[in-house]
Image 1: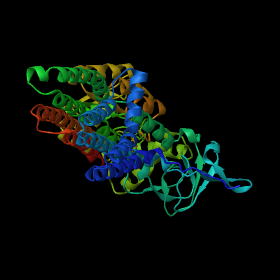
Image 2: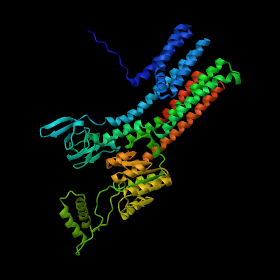
Image 3: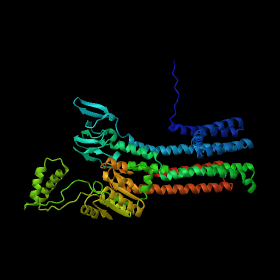
Image 4: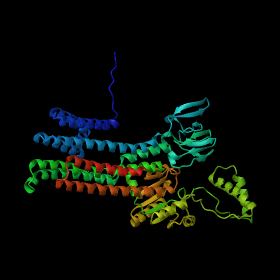
Length: 574
């Protein structure tokens, strides 16, 4: 028996194929009308209406049936069918052509918008395809390939040169350079050795590594990123929700005006009924808010995709908008502005012992310790031996400031941020010292989590839009309460990551100014799009009222403006 198989068309390409088929049918129909094969031409144009308008009709009827709302797609179909009906009634077959061209242009616009949105989706989803499916686990029996989902905490994973690291973990043997661009946005590979943390989805360089799994695969950094990206794609920002509410009311107003447009002109302007109906159909097309609807989400999704490539993860489009409006930024200190490493800041000898002797004795006691304080003492002694030999005195040191912190704060001030504020639980003297070195505007020390929360509230009263940057559990309330919460992706706790709106994947403070600039660009493009869309709707309505456009020109103007604002939004992908 011969098996028959049906050709299945991917939904992703279905609209494109339907558009091509509709275009071919419109051309064939025009040929038939040219040779006066009216019956055949009407049949072909009917097929063009069905194939080209099927998707819009389905969406429009579904919206009307399930949500009891008028959809722009349905208005387009009504206009096209109205033109066809008017053409058959008056035997003016060019009106049938006008309706078919309306559907064709609408289908082309839909296909192009789908293509544009798919490009944005690809940029985001590329983040999700960076981890291998299996890992090479070493146990008593040797090597074996294990599915990533079956890895257990404590498993030892072998990673060879050039391979993708399959899981978050700690290097227990070997050293190499790791390309972390896919996760942190760092352009330069990072040297890693025993004891360093590595992340799933990063690329191993020229060394052989054995990595100990330190958390379940579903808790890895890349998996958290994927969940946050998926969340960002499903949440509409306030501006988009407002436009969607506006569209529902606007569509009803358009229908009411179309009815008035059908009734009043013959009595007021002396138009004949055919002209009135034709102008009403054009009115339905050009007044539809498609360009307005396309003004926001393509722009924000493009911004989210660009941010992800740069190591800045926006949880949703609303946060991208808000980041562009931030006027003040509050920072935690330890782990955010500073590295958070314990260091010896002073030595107070007793019993007439020298500082050198005290440090030397303490270091010998702590030489085998793995406690952070003990390691800090040993490290201070190693450094001191170098400087003492050259007759240099040790000076008290605070927590080490991150290398990029000075430049990051300067960049924020250059962008016009009105206040840079430190909110830390550390002692006031240390906080003040760090604040002065970084040229921060205000420094608050010895704060409890509720104190940080109160200061965020005060800043919002003064500046309206405030970002909070932190990494610890004690920062979570302030991160959640701020207009925009920004967490450190590498060093941040799970609570901080969940509470924040934006995650800096490389813990690089320099990304803050990039995030603000990206938000400002997005807001600027959205304003451009909305202004252009409203102006073009007004222009087309005016042209229709004075009778200077026909239905195809109205469709071209309407769909052209929609396509232009969509493409304008995609500029953020660059």
